[in-house]
Image: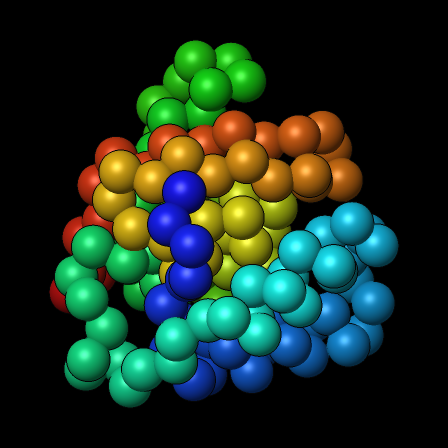
Length: 125
């Protein structure tokens, strides 16, 4: 896993607000606050192409069940699981946000520990 995640300022604020409203477990809160403290914030136009972010199509491998999935990461109001539009505030979204292609992310989600490998990130047009 890369040490410091890279987030757009809007995503940073969204996650900070999510934590502040106690929508995460204590373990997740501790991890998220630590990540946010060390995160690099950039403008959307300066976000590297291989970074997981909102409005990007992410292909990842879930090592728990050995499945590959492709999702579109969206803001919470645009989430539609049936269309593979997953909220950035979902377990998978919050685990992968800010990481880059090649990273293996381990995350203590509510539904069990996640181990996700980021295979591909594409800009949604």
